[in-house]
Length: 382
Image 1: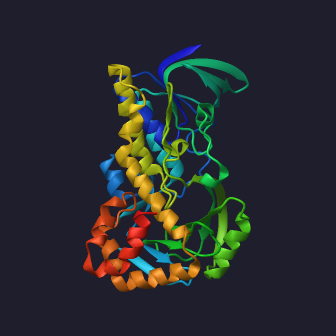
Image 2: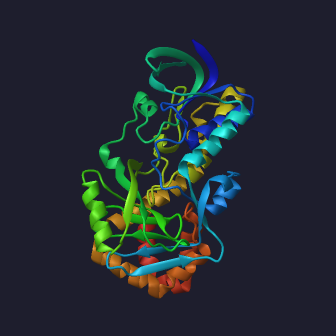
Image 3: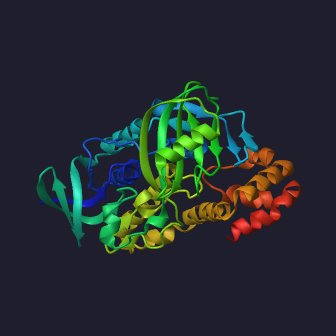
């Protein structure tokens, strides 16, 4: 029977960041990873904001494959909003290598990584783990569930969301002709309740995908997207995954267990992204665990410490609710109205892909955006 102060389930970037922060403070930390290596399978588009990546101190130089300056957002009728800056605003990263960057940091901090280790159950301070074909028990004062969207730890805790809380996504690496400086977002019937995207790696390669309600045929939806927008591409790799699409969970702690990242449904409902805000949540959880183990504060303090971050998650959710309540014609009219009101110029200057609270208040204070005030207010009150 092994023993450590903290057991982290899941060796994704969020779990590894939490483990690293704890190990750097002198705690004994062990990470249990179901797969045989970190970084597989790849289930993420790998687009992250430059400003927040830099402020979090994540060294992405070695895993960055492209830098993005802006976005083109298309309504169902192809009306386009273009947001652009002179300097890069986002990185496109090799997701497998991005995970390995976090692995190196964790190993350098002294974190133990145990592969082929599937958590079966947890009771009190004991983790029951299947390692290969044998069962083992591990003692941990605190158990962190960072095991992704289909979290076993979340299920053990009794917090299991329904299928309506997820969006199904499919993504393909495609060869074609792309503008390497812009990501594209496409709204339309091919992606009911969500959107399609094009994230360029270069002029000739891009990650193309779409999200849709569970129950939609993914291959038919992707084919419809490609045909409706006139893309001529050759696909060479594809993956699929579930994306959390809910407000953040109110209860992410039970006894000595705590959830973080996709396991805690901590993903942006607007885009599905969770790497940056997940890293912020990992830092909050690690500080909460330190307070719990060193000072005896309740582990539930983590839920209170998430208050400000959850405001951002909630705002992403309200924006998603607002757009999902519109029909195609209403979305088309909204884009035309937004274009006339100067939204492109405003978002080019003030937009933040992670923190919508930084620009929604400023939008309401702009006279030129008064045309959109009813929509912005309804979004905030959704």
